[in-house]
Length: 562
Image (cartoon, rainbow, N blue to C red; front, top):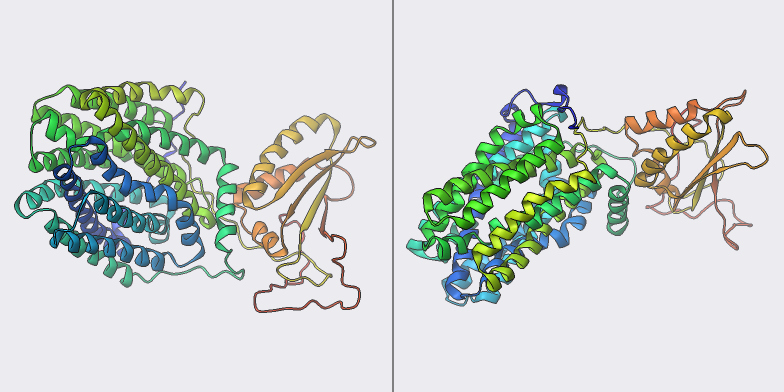
C-alpha cells in the first residue's frame, strides 16, 4: 500500500516564492548563466572528443571526467562547507573551475588539446564544481526559510534545465561555427556573474562558542551521521542506483546524435536541449507531484517513465521522435533528482547539512560516472542501441528495490534545539581532556522493559550519529528494574559538540525514554573522565592551557540532554 502524500504544511506557497528573497534571486539568476556556460562547455568537450577519436569509451569518459571528482571529493567538500564560511568556499571552488576552463581555452587556441589533456582539464573543472556543490546547495537553506526550501531546490533544478534546454543548442551552433575553443572561452566568461553575486551576498553567520572540527574529524563525523541515519542511507542507495542505470542516456547522447540519427554538433545540441526542456517542465510540476504522491510512488512513476523514454531513444531513427522521448526523460529525470535532494536536505540538521548533501552528490555523480564508463564499454562491444535497451530494462526493474528500501516520507527539517549550558564540572578540564564516559541509570517497571528497550534502540542511533561512541545498554541481573545506558566521547570538546547537536525531535525522544523511569529518585547521570594508567596529575591540579583549549561554563543544569 502506498504511503499517503506528503503533509501540505511542508509544501511551499509557490514555485516562485524563494525569488522574493534578494540573495537567493541574485544568486539564482547568476547561476543560470553559469549553468549555461557549463552546458556549452560540455557540448564543446563531448563533441570535441568525437572529433579526436572514434572510441565510444573515450567519448563516454568525458562525463566520467566531469562527474568522478564529485564522487571522490564530495565528502571532504561537505566537511569544508560545514566548517567554514560557505560563501568563501563557493568562491574558491568557482575559481578552480574557472582556472580549468581557462586552461582548456588556451590549449585549444594553440592546437595543443588532445584526448588525454581534454579529460585531465575536464577533471579539474569537475573538481572545482565538486568542491562548490555542497557549499552552494547547503547555503540555500541560509537564503530562504525552511518552508520554502523544496521550492528553492526545484528552482535550482529549473535553472539548470533552462540552461540545458537552450545551452546545448547554443553550444552546438558555437562549436559548429567557431570550434571548441569558442565554447570554452564563453564558459569562462559566464562564470564571472556568479562570482560577483557571491561576493555581494552578505551571509549572516551563526557564531559558535565551540571551535570547528578538524577536517579528518569532520569527515568522520559526517560519515557516522549518515551511517546511523536510516532515511538518508535509503535515499543515497536509491540515488546511486538511479545514476548508474539512467546515466546511459547522458553518456551516450553524443553517439545517439552521431550514430543513430546521423547528425552533427547541431543535432547533438538540439537533443540535449530537448532533454533540458523536459527538465524545466518537470521542475514546474514538481510541487504538484509532491502534493499528490508519496516519495516512493513518485520515484516509481519516474523510473518507469524513464525506462520507456530510453527505449524509445534506442529504437528511434527520427530526430523529432527522439527529441520528444528525450523531453519525457528530462522531465522525470529532474523530478527524481529533486525528490532525492529534498529528502536529504530535510533529513539532516544544519550542522551536518553540507556533508549530507556531499554524500548525495557523491552518490548521484558517482553513479553517473561509473555508469557512463560501463555504458561506454557496452556500446563499444554491442552498439549504442543495445546499450540503451539494456539501460531501459534495468530502469524498468529498478522500482523493485522499493520492496526492501522504501523511500522515507519527506517532512520538515528537524532543526537543532537551543544551545545547552555545560554541565556542572569540578575537575579541571581542557578541550583535549578525555575520553568522557557517560552513564545513565534508569529504573524501569518490568512490564515496560520491552517497549523501553525498543525505544532505546532509536535513542542509540541519534546518540551515535551526533558523536557518541561505544554505546551500550545493560540490565542489572540482581535488580531487573535497573538499566544502565553507557557511551563515551573522545574528548571533552567532542562531548560539548555532541550535546549541542541534538534536534528537537531527538530531545523529545530522549525525554520519552526518561518518562519510563519510576521511583522516588530522578534518572541518574554520571559524567566521568576516563583515566588510563599514568594519566593522573598528582602534583599539579591546574592543567596547562593554550589558545585551543576550551573550558566549560560551571553551571548546574537540570533536566537537560545527557
